[in-house]
Structure formats: C-alpha cells, structure tokens
Length: 415
Image (cartoon, rainbow, N blue to C red; front, side):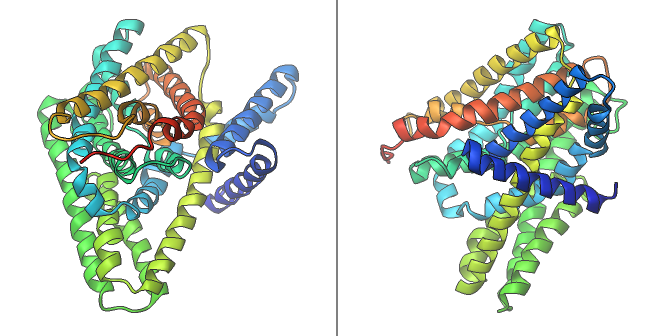
C-alpha cells in the first residue's frame, strides 16, 4: 500500500472507532479509540485461533508491521504533537514552576531509569545495560496522553503547568538518555554516540543543541510573523516551523523533541502576544487544536493495533506485570524526591505527589522507542513489557486520574 492509502485507512478507522466510542463507550476520545482498536485487534486474533484456515490475522499483522510505527511517530507525528502541546503552555506560568519542572525532567528521569533498570535486571536476569535502556524508554511521561487527560481534570493552574511542562520536557530528556544508553548497550547498532566516551558528547549535543535550535528557529519565525498580517499565511508558517525545524533537528543530530517544545513555547507565548493579531491567534489555536485531535486519534489507534507486533507467553506476562509495578514505583520516586527537595523553599498544591505520580502516563513514545531497538535476545521481552505498561497506563491510570485530581487536587497553592 502507498503512504496515502495507509494514511487514508488509518483516518477512516480512527473515525469509525471514535464513532463507536461516542455512541457506546462514551470514554474520553483518545482512550476510547485505543480500547476499541485493542478489542478489534484481539477479536481478529481470536477469530484466527477459532478458524485457523482464515488468513485475516496474518493479513492484518502484515499490514500493521508494514507501518513503521517508530519512524511514523519519532520522525513524523511527534514534532507536530509536541509543538501543538507547547503552544498552550505560557512561559510566564512555566517560569514560576521552573524548579520542579527542571528537577523532574532531569533528576526524575534519571531516578526512574535507574529504578526500573536495576529492578528489571534483578527480576528477569536481563543484562544491566539492556535493562537500563528499558528503564530509559519507559520513564518519560507521554505529553500526548498527559495533556489529553488534563482536559478532563479540574486542576489549579500551578499544578496543571507542572504536569504539562514536565511531560513536555522529560519526553525530550528521556529520548536523549535512551539514545545515550543504546549507544553504550548496543555499540554495533545504528545509533550514534556509541560507547561511554561519546555518551556525554551525545547528551550535550542532543539536549543543548535541540534547545538552542528551537529557540533560534522560533525567534526567527516570530520576527518574520511580526511583519505579516495574514492569518492563513501565519498559520502556514507555524506549520512550516514545526515540520522544518523537526527535520532540521534530525539532520543536525540534535534533539528534535526538545527543539519542537522550545519553538512551540516561544511561538505560543511571545509570538502570540507580540507577533499575531487577535484573528491570527484564533486561526493558529483552532488549526493546532484540530491537528492535535486528529493525530491523537491516529496515534492511539496505532497503539491499539500494535498488539499484533507483540509476543505473549506466561514468562513475558509475569515480566510485564513486574514492569508495571516498577514503572509506578519509579514514577513515585521521580515525583516525590524533587518535591521533597523543594518543599523547604515553597509550598505545593494538596495532592501534588499522588496526582503527578498517577497522572504520569506512558504512551506511544515508549512503544516507538522499544520498536526502534536493535534486534537481540531481550528485545521481544522489552517490547511486550513496554506495551503492557503503556496499555495499563493509558486505560487504567488515564480513566482514573481525572476523578483523583478532582477529589484531592482542587485546593489552591500557598505561595
């Protein structure tokens, strides 16, 4: 199938599954689409087991495996999704929460990677470096899933900014840590930065380079938009920034996710206030909201059908269950330690630790990173465990975090 045919089929399926969710399940749109897609996939697998002569499961698996989920997300959809998410986070709000956001996106990712890596290695016998790679890919919270849940919860502005800002930045940092560890654990793989010597250089190049490129590209775009008063053209320019900046980041080997976040933050705040008319702001907000909703639907559909790429057996099920518990414990540490360190200097909203722990949803980024790993003895177990953690996170945590937040997170912050 051509790329256009695949894209058309995915959008049609997302629309059909979204309609089923709207009339039957009535769940939040993205989660509902994922659940319907997962049940449809399991139904196909069940039909194949009952009717072995049928080739429907084999044909569906071939179609799913023909979609390079890793490339489609990491080198296509992710830039648009991160840019769209960053547009709605104001720098003024983020500056007030920069301490906790910075610690969670750096120390938090490191703690989570270590806890999951050492724990998973001890439980499964996996080599420690390979287990740390698993820890790195499962540690970042997915801004797509997190920001979607925020729309359903009634949170204070400060807590919402903490969650949104951390999810945007720890995604980029986690991706860089993943690349560094893959370069060490799989030195013969196709990832650059192999070996410990190249790890520090790679981290600085990816993280600092991505932030610098995002700020420079966003600033230049803002300077151009100041001299234009055409809502359609200015919206097109923001799309060009998201696409072009992301691909330039890939070409320059700097962190494309961090670039997209920094560029989106600058355009969404400084650009919106000083470079856009009121009409242009409405155009840009509506356009990127629509892009966000469509790509969310397609992404969660893809997560649901990726069950065809996963191998399940009893041992992998036990490992996946352990991975879910480890991921939750690691997330608790990633939130509780930075909050505890900063508590002597400032107060936090009631329920910050439980809400941010349970609301740290994993998503398509973790699955994409797992699928991008070089083939090896432990790769199938990592993929299966990652998929189970993501499904549990989105379905169980995603459906319960909003009621949790509404119940314990409404009291205003004491500054």
